[in-house]
Length: 369
Image (cartoon, rainbow, N blue to C red; front, side):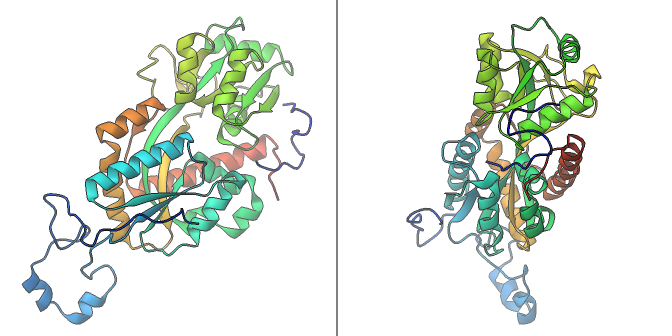
């Protein structure tokens, strides 16, 4: 597939402290109703039982009675304030604080395609007081940045906590094209090799690699990938007639679909969108097999964090994501609450790491050394 000047495959490409004063911590932490006074992450034991326990047993990590958390928990965000994932995480922090009485604060450390935030988070103490946001770009980062991959193995440097939410990507095309459905769209692309543009959210970003994956699976489609600064601008380019098509999260695309300025062709994922029931999945069309990728919102902690604290965080985040206020936020951005267990997130990271490594190789995209 041809690329714009300065962005051809095989060429070298570069990818695009703690917050201010901390939140005051009350002298006595409020405990949610119905939760025992002995702590949030251990079975409640009577004072008599604890006094009777052997001192050696109480000293062992994970078995000692503890009141966690006793100070603010920090979300390290590799995204700028006001971005979609930042807004969602701030809403999550508010719900968590309301649920638990604990303070949750946001620490934005964006830049270098997420490498700055990841490098900072991985060096923090593995004590359960640092959470790191990661999505598909978190897995793509070591694929597109070999220096980062040599420094940090995302599979072991971080422990998974939960996939908080997930949502499909939506393939949209210009309504000026003669194609009315996905079959006609693929046929038109094949009939016009090298004569169409695909808007992406930046070289090496999830949308870029997803568009490349679609072209590979649909029979080696040939055209030009044009990078924009984010999903929203990429979809806007299709609506304005600057590009012929793109793939982006449904929250960025559906308003344009509703307005008739772009045409929905297909969704990724295993099921159709409830909001667009007539739009098929790529899997069911058979035109681009093997594309069931979704946008996922996940949280990690530095590797070696005590399992009991990971379990507490997973349980509270999962419950918070199903809070009505969070559901509303998620739906606005095209996501649904999930709240998976850590092992599910571990498997998704391994799966997507293998997928994007293969796509970069097959599409002959040169990573940053």
